[in-house]
Image 1 (cartoon, one colour):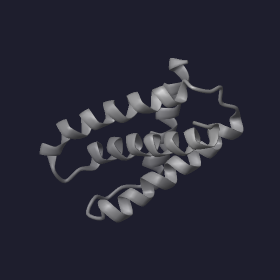
Image 2 (image 1 turned 90 degrees about the horizontal axis):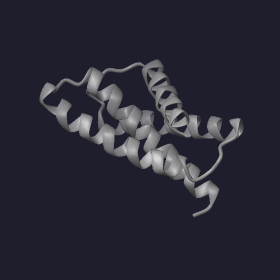
Image 3 (image 1 turned 30 degrees about the horizontal axis):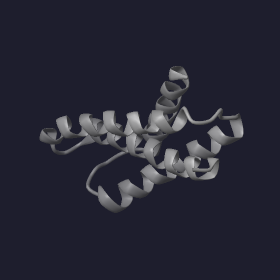
Image 4 (image 1 turned 60 degrees about the vertical axis):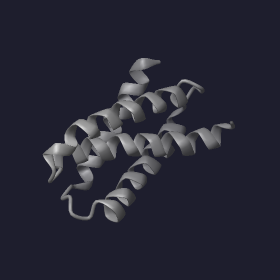
Length: 105
């Protein structure tokens, strides 16, 4: 798989991790928290595998970050309209995930 395809996949996975982190924090259904925690772990593991395939320059990281934020916002708007969130929460969650992935390198 080429680097552009990995950027696309990685952005989706990071966006999914961020989405689930924010959902866990803001959910209206506390019974969903265990499932959300499991999905965070699974998406983070998949993102880690993708992240380790290449060396990422700052431009790549910025593209990944922007696409991941867009992905999480899209999912919130289309699948979780009843959950209140702030875009800043998503940005912080995406930054956190990227920092975790960098630390694992």
